Image (tube, rainbow over all chains, first blue to last red; front, side):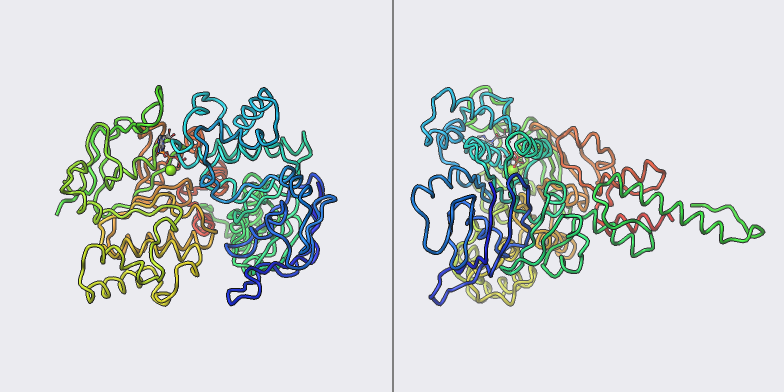
Length: 306
Length: 280
Ligand SMILES: Nc1ncnc2c1ncn2[C@@H]1O[C@H](COP(=O)(O)OP(=O)(O)OP(=O)(O)O)[C@@H](O)[C@H]1O
Ligand SMILES: [Mg+2]
């Protein structure tokens, strides 16, 4: 599904003394099957923006189109709202607070039951979703209370609940905070998988630039309710000054490359993996060394300890 | 004064509602934490970090074994109040800990509940707010504070009781990177300048790298323990323990493979490039 945001402004508590402009004139497009990152510090407007995507919020002015469904200040038809909730799955930040059912199974099955699916279909969806969040191995876990789980386990159960709805658009707010490596890798692998096999559109909300760099085709950077930067991650992350002015930090690897460049290492600024940065740094040192040797008159050549 | 703050001896813990056949959340763990230590606690989801953290101030009591805090047994009801004062807890979501409608009242709350006289409360509250850098915000309602500021407010509330130790369970999980860095810097500052003992639960090797000592849990047992440079040197081992390996750790390892010596605990961009320079 595609999402088109046109001149969106959102004002909370409009017309009261607590009035607060959370989004100003945002326009952006997310293509069908794309994976985009929405990045910004706390309070920059990320969550307000994505809550328009499934109709939890309506524009104060401007519009949001999710395929043919339009959201404007006029509201949306009830039938459209139901369809929207079904197609767009939203995982909030700190979702473990939303768990409520007596067992993990009931929690994950809650959404599919609302869709009035057959029991066998529900069961299949629950198991698939639990595997997707790396909780499929332990069958007893399904019959435990969600409150009898660790923080990271609860978060994964909440995500399984969203996946079990088989949405067409997946909006994830800080999905990997607090997850261990296995759960995180499984989550990323599943997201890629869902994209390829089902053409899912994915919106990742994050303040972790590194995470976004690896997964997203396009990043949108918000600051103070405005869209400040957008483009492919490798382009956006080179704009260090702009990123800093949005209150964010570039991914650690990009920061290291910037620092190394400042120290005279000639490495390209658009490298995004540790392998490539390591190669480039080793190469740069070698070149540096060779040049230093070439510049030294042979008579004075001394053994160079490195 | 006792040099050992926490003596954890053969401690096991099983949750009552865990259901039959569930393994213990903690299984015969023995540890010692000295006064003034900064300890990082790592481990996969469900490895027992939060359980261990909650045993440290008697929020949970061991199923078997004992936890001694400054020599006091956490099962001793008479010592409970004193232990809660000695060991302050901080969690990911500070909003669970914020009780008052003004910043300074929130910090004063614990003292007022203990019946302290007003002038001494005012003094302590002032010092606690200074220590976390929120002095200017004292008259504000907490909900006007940013996430990072609210987390610092929660710390001020704990500091007002002048604890010997802060146990922080994933204190940066909900913060953006800058606020995260500030929070870690604050914990280290309190450790250095106030001699506070810190137990810091985290999933981030970058944060653990700054501790004096790292303890890694796996399925309820201590599996690895030592100074960061030693614990972080074996990335394959850490990966097998399901820890998230930061990209800079991989970069450091690759450089080491090329014969460039980067210490294993150089996990910030600054530390890494400094180490690179030092070998040029
Ligand atoms: N309230 C509870 N009731 C029953 N079992 C629990 C409860 N809390 C945790 N557990 C179980 O105890 C074990 C240890 O959990 P703990 O919360 O200590 O892990 P953790 O290391 O903090 O994990 P995370 O990284 O996910 O926060 C897990 O198997 C978990 O399922
Ligand atoms: Mg925990």
